[in-house]
Length: 248
Image 1: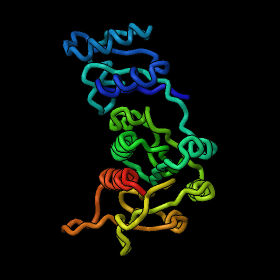
Image 2: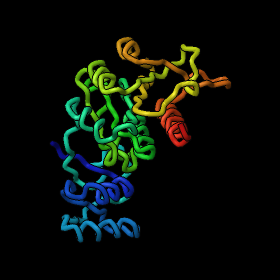
Image 3: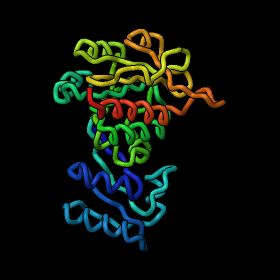
């Protein structure tokens, strides 16, 4: 475990609401008049979390380039999950298992947005490679707007092996790519499914793609050839939810 700083009103509020036992202290900017910041400070005190008022320069220093809005929290981040957690999470979800796999997403804002969509879609887990991908950084937490605290994030040492674990458990895997004639909307996504999206520039790696049961694309009749990975994630997750809401 390691300490990191959660920056901004909504991320701090999410940490206090969802994982307050890991919040070690809250720093509030001297002279801060924002009512929501004061509310967070009072909530932290009620939870017996130390609250300190500090100069803006100190909050700037721990926040880096992120906009802190007058409040930050020091957070003891739990370790990301591992491949050993996959079977347990699948068993808990049963036939409702919905897994998102991100093959090499390196932009923290994109990962954060994907986690936010995953939380909204009640995704069972998000699986990312342990290497050559962004981890659970403070920027990811901020961009996720609390999603990082609600969805298990698995760091897989071997992504292809993790996908085979999913397949062995009866999960059907669909990868997203633009160079196929199969439409996403023709794929049956009811029951246990995993949806795989590749990195921002390169897409899915070859071995990842070969492990998928299906490869489909999001039809785009307009002039654009591709979508941002976080936008594509929202589309595929909520198409899965739409199908699941219909009677079999």
